[in-house]
Length: 247
Image 1 (spheres, rainbow, N blue to C red):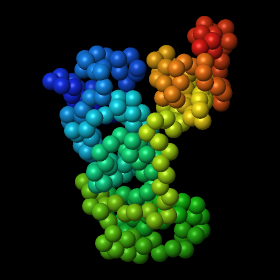
Image 2: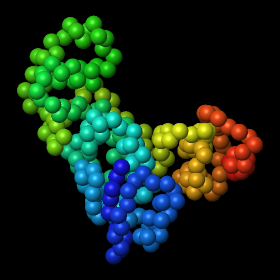
Image 3: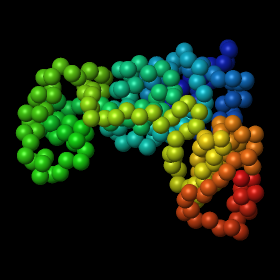
Image 4: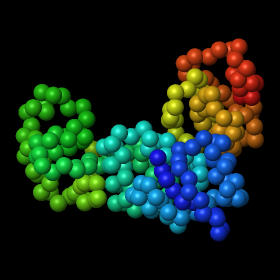
């Protein structure tokens, strides 16, 4: 969860993300928004303080918070350590970082050299077999790593670059990459002028409208729609009847 103070003019309000579209509307109303607010203070996690003083798109911030909720504790710590150390100051880059936490290895416990060596090898050579792993001197690898001088010290441990990682940026700043935040009954793919947005249904109407606008279309009927996954669908349900007519 991201806890943050947002500011618009002389109005400052506390909000927590992720949130629903209805809650987003409340935020916009309280701040009297006609554009993007400024991040006044990143209360939690503090490692996102690079956002402070910058304008932020609330939909992007909400997507980032959803991505962060999927992390286990190690992934979260690694993400926050990288964000703080690299001084990342915009949400687009933070979203892309959520897909690239493997670009670094975070060492937080320095008491067991063998454990450090194993963690580093598994992170950098993900497909290594257990037999190959047993043949390695993991304790020596751990010692060599810590004495290499390549670690960047952070409040959460030491970061070591994963030289094997190919850094990719799935988020272009406009259309959100596929991400199944909550269990959905139906997943649909909207396409318009070569751009793609994913709908995770059922969802609030405003979320669908925003996806259509991000594609650059005026209305959903202008987009092509492919249902990519069906978990359960009752065609007698009035919600789905309304939805199918809309898209």
